[in-house]
Image 1 (cartoon, one colour):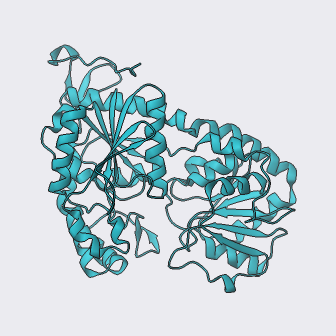
Image 2 (tube, rainbow, N blue to C red; image 1 turned 45 degrees about the vertical axis):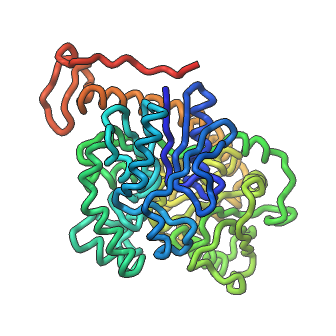
Image 3 (spheres, rainbow, N blue to C red; image 1 turned 90 degrees about the horizontal axis):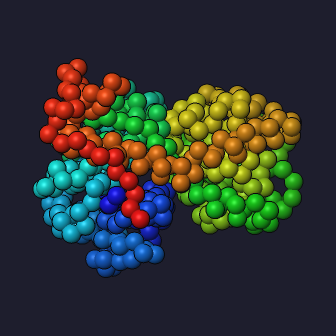
Amino acid sequence: MRILTLAEFYPPVIGGLEKHAQRLSHELRRIGHDVEVATLAGPDDPAVGDDDGIRVNRLGGWRRVLNRFYEDGGRGFHPTMPDPGIRNELDRIVDRFKPDVVHVHGWIVYSALTRRGRDDHAVVVTMHDFGLPCPKRNFLHHETELCTGPGPIKCYQCALPHYGMVKGIGLTTGMKLNTRLNARADRFVGVSSAVRDAVVGSGVNRGVPVEVVPNFFDPSGATAAVGAPRPDCVPADGEYVLFVGALNEFKGVHMLCDIWRERRPNAPLVLLGNPRADTPDPGSLPDGVTMVQNVPHPDVMAAFANCTVAVSPSLGPDACPTTALEAMALGKPVIGTNIGGIPDLVVDGKTGTIVEPRDKAALADAIDELLASPALAGQLGAAGRDHSTGFTVEAVARRLEGTYDRAIRRRRNGGLEPDTTGRFVEANTSRRVHPEQLSQQVPTTTPRG
């Protein structure tokens, strides 16, 4: 199968989505597919590069005129509307590479769905967050409560305080005007059931099937961390509770600090992650809490390997936190909140503990319970290690092969979907069509090589 990975950003740009696109591309190539990458160009990037045998096409487009509106002008993300320049560059790449599938990550989908000749390949769109129905990508209304779905005025009222007037109006208007393009995709993939439910409930998928395929972790990182010495970012000895993620209120960092300030659990708390505008001041941290920013990933994995309990106490709908998978892969129990994609990963009472978001007392009780019961922590951690095998990069790539297959079949069959009887049905209708009525029977695709 020929697969074009189309992502807003790609390494050397650093970030979770970027690493996801890179690892998935290399895994698909390893299991036998022909893979190329297309991504937005940075200020000094060459038009074509090589990533260990994978061709990387860098796209300029017209979006660069918007760079002054972004906090980081060298990393201006794709807007919520088609970019004619990127669309034309994609035409040339597709004409040369002739992919069977274009797998899109991010808002660059708006350019992918307007390019000419789009009927010659399937389009699969992975939603790593809530960015299809929500301009802010987090599906939180005014940052305080779960959104019930987009509305004509509602999204403007919510997005403008978040982005500012110019960018908020531009992103929200672009999304409203271009939602109709989503009907041209062949499959949407949500990284959790929460993302899928938000998309389907909002109707922005426009009748296109939505599947759940989770994020993954790289098991080689877990293997290397087993038996590794403690990194400098954690205590030299003894137990500790570990949080890894964005160091902000959304991720529950402030609530964790309050627990150590008010109840002081019987182990120190270590906060590792990237700073945000609302990251706590290091001087305000309570006793027993340390915070280290921008820790290299191998040290993060070694920190997981040596901790007693991992916590993922998001207050809002975290789409699919990979850190929970990494902790489980290293045999650590995870305490998470019952929101977003966390319940898809952490099985309450089996691989960890699930508490309600913003329930500080329940979170503190769960931490105390696992610190006081090494046997229970070990039992949950061992189950988590077994559970994590379904979330390796290879396991997820194999699941995506099936997604690609179904997308190709849908494209070649004019948007018709097979039902449980082997017949094909139109999206959003009950009219059935016998396979022999179709002009073309679509074979199952198989990896090359």
